[in-house]
Length: 298
Length: 166
Image (cartoon, rainbow over all chains, first blue to last red; front, side):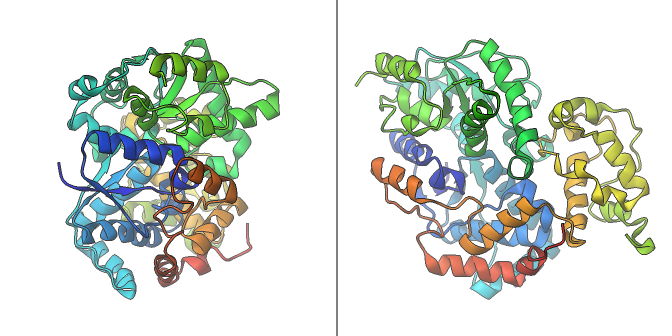
């Protein structure tokens, strides 16, 4: 495995720092060579900035990549949206000399130059490849007795021609990583459906966004799970913050706990919910925290 | 919209490697759309409209797409439908058509380098977790933020999103 820089994006460090902490604890435990990526900015968000102005999107995304190139490290993302932006922006410049030239004309003004020497990884596809689910299972110190509704999130696997991670209708790789922690991934209808947040819909059309989310939540509630697991802080924000917004609107609280995969894995490595910032979510579910205490102990 | 722009949408998409004229209007896209389930969004109609008229630039459905790519994955003609929607948005934005919230998010990036900047409550959460109050991003490095702002200006993004037309 190449050495990595940890690209944080916006929502992880600025809304859900527990995901950042959990990710670092897991990477250290797995002895994965990573470093901070000082001075990184917004990826910028794919569905929004990519659609506003391609030159801006390419310049900003590739500035983040150049920071990692200068460290001779591949970029590690922990967010589907950041992954979408950075993989696509990196590939576009690697594949298109004219775009590389025009983007470098902007980057030159800040003394940077895109070379095309590093790759962009997502923590889920990275962990699946190396160390892989079997090795992770061996390293788990406290197997989790949890039923999980897994949410892949769209930009992890789609567009499939660019992502090359197999089926987008019924993928399994993330389920295998979840089950390596001892948890069971419960199948539920519309498992691969969008959370409703992307493309600027959550920011501009919140009510519409929440309707899409509520459909998914109702399916998850019927599946009778302990928690939702995701690999994207923006989906995480939609599931966690969205439940509070739905409760305020409809008076009905789903109260389903939401965990990023790093937090789930952190629990299986014996860390407490508080160390992983699980108790800092907006959804508060005391039963879940009590169950975790029973599972992971103190 | 003036007459000169009439046929520009499908031409512009073609330039970006997206061919929408082969669409056979089967509706697989609409049937697959998670937004279409609850909003009025009808992807099939959006594609049809884009083929014939620039009215699509003013269609509110344009902004209901979450970019989940399900329509693009399932299209039997392999039309890059989601990419087309993004490209049509680009034309709209360059015509000054933009939702006010998107303008605001853009201005956050111009000011802070983050679409979702930090706040005091999260700084406290970070400290509680034993982390530094500010992350290793532009938030902590003013020179890096200045670089981001220089880049955005170089691309003309500040002017693009500064308008008031909605």
